[in-house]
Length: 359
Image (cartoon, rainbow, N blue to C red; front, side, top):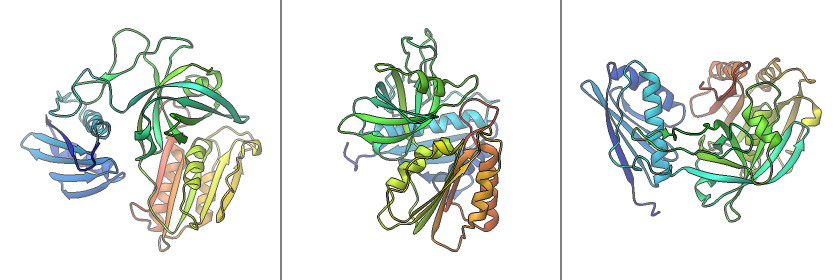
């Protein structure tokens, strides 16, 4: 698509407390994009496009713009999902003008098929997935949402576009489980992506189960990408547990030549170490839990605090891990004086809970 062509969609949403919803959404979007404007009339710029919110009496007009239909649909989905989250008592009827028509396939969805599998470490298995038209997944984010079959060998059911901009599902069939993963490697020409699965133990672990049991020919759905891109800096501090290792590995590999990085990774034991030293200027420290349960130690947060990153340096701090550790790291960076846009401390999971974490 011609990058000069801007696609647009708009919706007017009646709300009982429009300014409150706008404030909560503004705060959330401020963690991921560049906010401009005032409380009742603001816009936010993301890597994939822009969103504009303007209060009109007891309603809010949302306008989203992007250069391609997939990005536009993702912005529509984001607005609808968060408005419904922040105003559950209203249950507003959201209808968009413009964008993908209701009932059509999601422009950011691809059906993928397992074509190879490799055991990277005892607790990390890499699946190579094959699909068509993957150029969209090579930029504007490292992460995708995989739609995993509820039962082995079942016929998959896939979502379509709903009138509110979210995903509508067929009434028949078992719905797949949705989990967020990192694209470890993408080859657009070959139509392939690699995804690394941590083989957690425990109940209600559809990702780990699929990663362990997947066979050649198995099908999954993939939506995205998301998560944004790494902010430019003179040097980096990366920190994470094994769930963040695929993202850290890819970001380190893609760093510009000559940019130094410190990497701190917590793993179950030393057999889970991977080779992250293929480029000069990367200092890697492995933290072993000695097989203690994930999320049960303070190893990672302690190590980040001991590393002593300074907000006066041109450094970007990227961290992803269990929710309690992510919150501690975020609080520490704020206490040091790190400004928004100079760090990311994300909760990839929460101990004792299944599914994705909204933090």
